[in-house]
Amino acid sequence: MLVFLGTTANAFNSYQKAEQTSVRGKYQARAWTAFICFLLSILSAALALVAKWLSHDCTAFLSLALLTGAMALVVAAAVSAVREIK
Image 1 (spheres, rainbow, N blue to C red):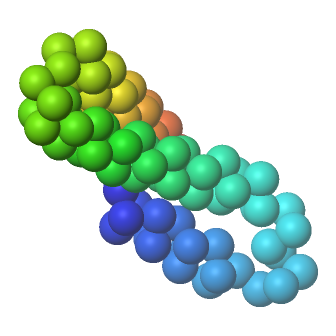
Image 2: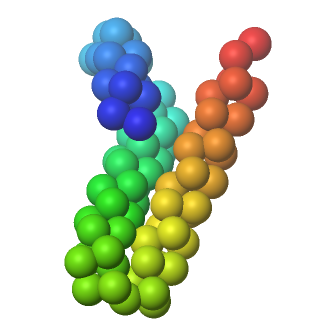
Image 3: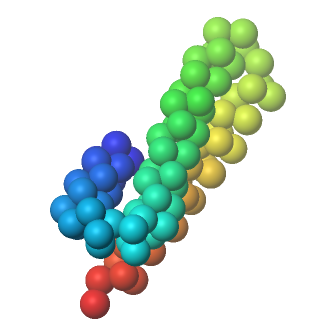
């Protein structure tokens, strides 16, 4: 997701300043999606470590749920990117 976030930022910056206003919403949505996926993944890993350390099944399940959500967002972002290619 960090690569996707970097690619999104570079693609947005490739537009001229006057053109950036018209495409800002699309690229901002992509960037936020990538950031949220990254954040969910990091949080999931941290919770998995806590779950292992404390032997707490509920925390492990929450970690799995966050990782599943991050994966679903990654798939949605990929499908959205592919659909925009004409």
